[in-house]
Image: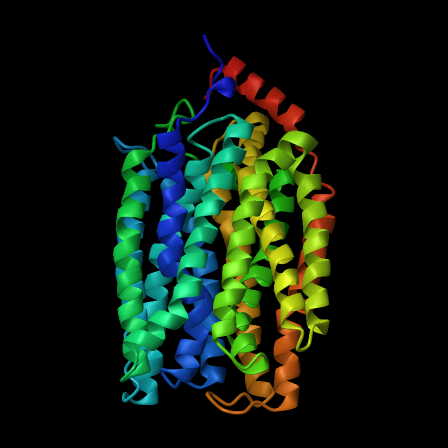
Length: 452
């Protein structure tokens, strides 16, 4: 019998799997990059109120990840454990994001804040349902570590393609559809993005297969088993810390970028170029990531080296000043690092799931992926809330002239804060010991036990 470790995914399976992240970013990137400035400059909600929202809702979003992940691990259906969640969560996400950008500037401040909280919480709940299942699916389409790296790489190509598409087109769509009223520009643009995303998400939900499922799936998995698979799983604990740091640097940088381009470079159109370069080179990095793994045989050390380069590039951007060409060059380097690191990072999580099954005889793809997402979202919650607080403290004026102290704060949040986060994650990854040879031995043992 041919070992599952040597099976490869077809081109159709690779594409259907990767389309999910393209569809997801077509709508969720509006939240990541544009929601805060939409709330402050279009919906006219005070920055301090938005910062509290970002903290409360994102902490809620992070906390519900392990709960939903546990439910996924217990799901039994004809199409698998995770694909039903992808379909339901994806459709719900599209509808809820459209509602988020349905602004009512003439409402009372209390009504606007209530609407902001309700729609945001609904959206992040559906986002969790979709993305937790999607992350878990990566470990269920193959046990081959190289195939997972390839699938993760292609997925990140699609993810950054979605960011490129929306990030570059958004300023122009907002301007075109918002000639009479800016809020209409946002709403129509988001609706168009959701229509594009729907068939892509459905392709992932209906066009993939879950070939990795633990034997004895009818047995209940206790909470004690789940937490043991996490807390005594050293590779997973390292990845959890890295996801926390990744959430700080990625979410914070993307959210601040709209303010940076609007008020530091004095043109939101610069954001279109910033996003274009960042996404194009991230796509290149995602493509190269499997080759980096093939050459090094160690995802952890390769990722650490990439993050050190990324940190240097981010820090140098602080000193570019009016040298926009140099800024764009450094953004390109950062984008390449983003893509290659993300592809390797998301392919390491399924390997850590295999390690847990090898050590503790329990397979909890959903729970461990949810914990990783918890770290990422918690980091995002902290940095986005901090962004709102900093803007408020330094006297941010919506659609107005910013004082020097506020501009300086924006520059630091765009450069040094994410750079420090990258360095901390890189140091942690130096202690990640699960290389390709060790993972191959783990899969051989699991196949010998006949538990896959």
